Amino acid sequence: MSRFYRRSVGMAGVAAVIALGLAIPPPCASEEPSAPADGAAATDTQPEQGIHGRVRAALQRLSPMRMRADRLYQRASEAFPAFCQDWESKLRERERNNVSHIEWKDSSGVETGSYVGYGKIMSCVCKQSAKGVPIGKLMYQEFQYQLQGKTMDDAMHAAPKPARTTNTTEIFGFDSRLNKWTY
Image (cartoon, rainbow, N blue to C red; front, side):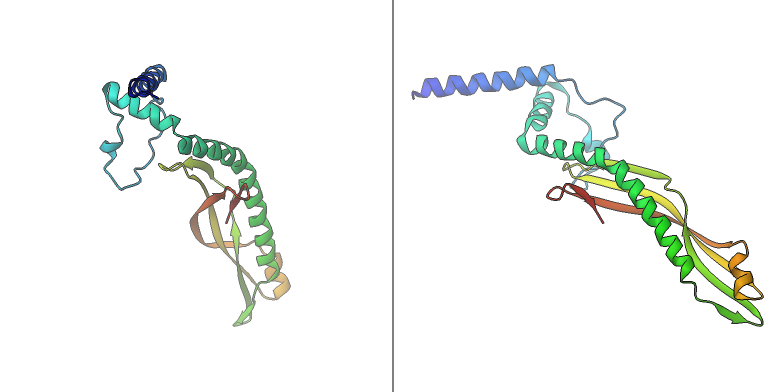
């Protein structure tokens, strides 16, 4: 192959990328910017202006690694709501187990026991890191309940009193080999 031919093919490829970069609109302004991977300041994540910035953005969107990461994120974000529902059912089961294994203490003729209960999931969010990794975050509250009564039977039938509330945030990763969220 002649040097001229290779050069013209390369220039045609660059022209195609530039044309494609100009045709692809920049991301929506309503999207949340991802945190920079290298700890750079938030102002460094602003898109570059001009043709060079748009070409660089188009090349980044078209890179095989980024396209693979975007497909993985799509699968993960579709699976995360079901994972959150499953997690909430695990919390309900754990609370039932906690209630059935209360350790009772007799203090001056009063039976006292405590257990941990869980509120509903308040937030179930899937995001993509700057490097394209799917990250799942869910938030709920944990409650430390106290039960008291003259006898253990009275205490078990008494209304639980909340003693302490803890806001809990769980972070999960998506295993691409197993195609599921892991904990």
